[in-house]
Amino acid sequence: MRLTISIVNWNTKELLKNCLESIFQNYSGNDYEVIVVDNNSNDGSIEMLEKCFPRVKKIKNEYNAGFGKANNQAMAVCEGEYILILNPDIVIKKGSLEKMLDFLEKNESAGAAGAKLLNPDGTVQMKGFYRKFPSLMQILLFKSVLYKIFRHFEGISSRYFEYQDINNLHEVDQIPGACILVKREVYKKIGGFDEEYFIWYEDVDWCYRMKKAGWKLYYLPEAEITHYGGQSFLNIDTGEKIVLFYTSLLKYFKKNLPQKDYFLARSIIISNFMIVNILQILLYPFAINKRKVWKANIFARWRFIKNVY
Image (cartoon, rainbow, N blue to C red; front, side):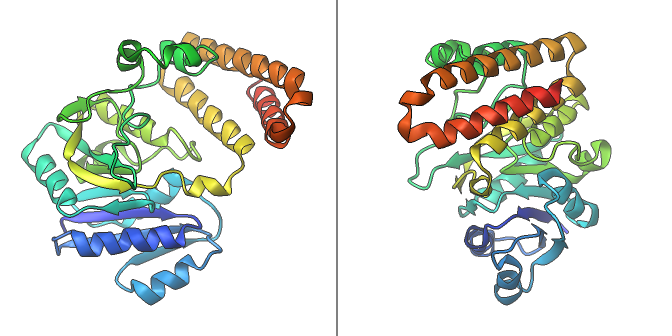
C-alpha cells in the first residue's frame, strides 16, 4: 500500500466530514487507507463515519488520548509506504498529496514534507507554523514581554523564530503536525510521537528526532491545503491552553536541550508570567469586559508556576 492517512478527531464532526470528502474527491490515488482515531468524541463523529464513510478504518478511544498517542495508535497498524499525519480541520486541494508523495519518492535524503497552509479565504498561513527549533534566544525574544517589540523585526524573526519564505521550496527545521507526510522507513527508525506530550510540541519533538537521525525536512509551496486551524482547541478554555502549551514547551527543553537552557527557559517563562499576572491584577478593576478571561488566565499561570516547581 502506498499511503496511510492518519487523522485524530475530538469533537470536530463537520470539519472531519469536510476533510474526508476532500481526500476522496481530490486525491487521485487508489492504493491508500484512511484511519481515524477518535478521542472519545460526544458530537456524533463516530456515527457520521459509519454512515458516510464506511471505507474509513476507525479506532475508538474511551478517553482523550491526546494527539501524539492517538496518531501512534494509527501508525502501529498502518500499511502505507508513506504516512500522512493530518488534522481534521484540513481540506485537501486537488493534486497536493500527489506532489508531496512524488517529492519524497524522488529525494532519498528527505524524510518528511509539509504543504503550504492557506486560510479559508486563500491567504497564506505561513507565519506561526514553519518555525525554527525552540531555543533559549527564541524564548527570550518571542515568549516573553519582549515579544511586543521584536515581533516587528523580520530579520530577527527569520533568524531565531520562523521562516519567512513562502514561495520557494526549502529545507526547514520542523513541519506543523496539521499536515506532515513521512516516509515509513523514518517511522520505523525513530518511532512515533513521544507520548509524554499530551498536546503541543509533540510534532516539534518528532521533527527534531528526524533531523537528529539524519533526515531532511522540506516545505513544498506547490502543495496547497486549506487549514481552518485550532478547531479542537475551541473546546479548551484559554487558561488550560496556557498550562498545556508551556508545560509541553518545557518538556521539549528538558528532553532535547542542555540542562542550563532548560532552567533558564523555565526562569524566563515564570518571570514573564509573574509580570503579566501582577499587571493584570493591578489593572483588573478597570478591565470590566476582560475580567472573566483575565481571572482564569491569572489562576492558570499561578498553577503552571506551582507545577513546574
